Image (cartoon, rainbow, N blue to C red; front, side, top):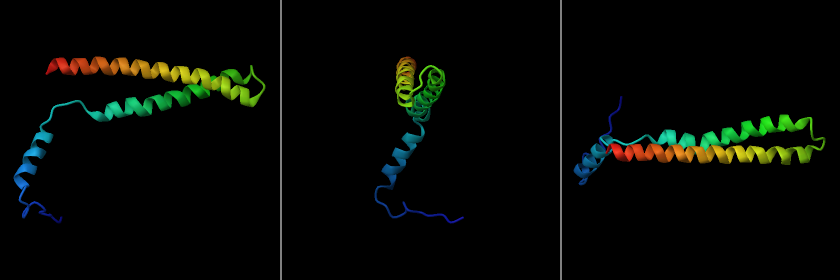
Length: 101
């Protein structure tokens, strides 16, 4: 395995080392879970609720375009409710994390 020593001739190698040590020892919540909850989950909830509402309205509405519009509104409502609940949970978790410090 080839080892590169980029910091050997750098005049700021001591400052960089202290910064990386501080970053490595930082104790904070993982941002990965927040990213998944903020972006991926609402998208999945919207797609699933759109598919479910489209199946529900498939037998009741004969026009394809009207069926899509009518299916879109409940899916959008469910997604906004999901986002609202996730924001409430996120605030509670942030408050817990702030109180632990």
